[in-house]
Length: 443
Image 1 (cartoon, one colour):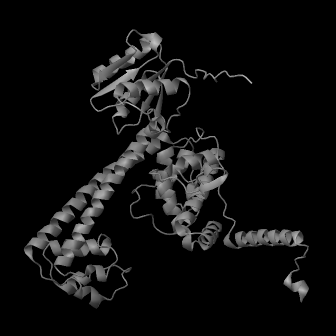
Image 2 (tube, rainbow, N blue to C red; image 1 turned 180 degrees about the horizontal axis):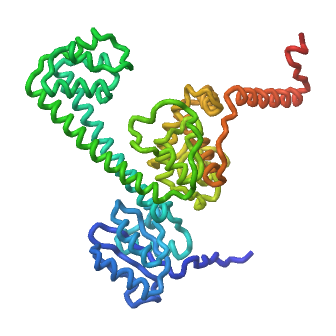
Image 3 (cartoon, rainbow, N blue to C red; image 1 turned 90 degrees about the vertical axis):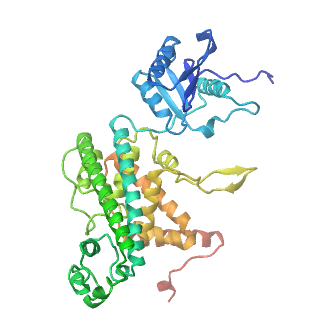
């Protein structure tokens, strides 16, 4: 037997490692490229340009950096524009060896790991899709802030004992906003306010007339006025985001045509953009993801803006689901499965798919039957994750192959499940030397 130690081959001989910081970046190149193979560069734009020039002089073509906050973004974009292959690596995957820790050692450790091909880059959409994702995430911020001011409205109404929440389901709906703005305009007559209801309100006109009767204290009215003004301000910001998103989606359209009529009737989601997003998403990827039960326009928009329309960077559907954090874990030691739980993830697309999976609880479709069968044999969180995994695989297949999703129906799914169970029981009976006889033949 040979006692020679295995020798690692250099996968990236021209690799550099960068330890990202807020005020400066530490860069390490191969020791034979410069008399001073480790340098520190301030984070000013001029210094970042000097950093890129130094890497070019050292013959570097591959760069590895940690994803530290948002400090990596300017340097990442600058290096990409200079033609470098940049790997954004997870900080958990590049933990330093035991012993002393410093920025100098970190960048040298990154350079060594990258040279031997021991690091893999994080997924980041390319080109205009990255800009689309940025604006889509920006749109989520005004929605969050706007919801806080809805709570401020409800608090002010409760302090004045205006029980609008008892007769209408949403104070920012059509009826609720008409009543609140009429109150701020000086209207105090309950009968006059009750006339502002629309036909969808189930409460009686008498109950609606009693609800907006309260103390009318000046400080609470002022708080209500402030909350409504801030709500409107964020509504204006949302409208601006929607216009920008529509412009970007129109520029990214790669397919022509219109999607088929919507599978499910009903209005669009409450927080959905004002424009026809379903058509833009169809022209973006060539398929209508809303044909999948449980996935509405908002969910499809969230997934496509996070991953883009080109999923070729994922080898297969399993790889895509693993990146989303929806695959079972493989924690095995000594041949014993210690845990099969999925790892915690903050992936926005995975969170959207989990919400879509939870909405299948009352769906009369094959996916709805699949979700309810999972809930019958495991706890609900695990069932939601497993169903979200299935939705992810369907999305990957539709986007990569351009196939349309066709629901096989709840009855057909249940029949196929019954056939599988009967086949399994017949096989088990044969192993025990028995024979499975249908009830009709036995009678």
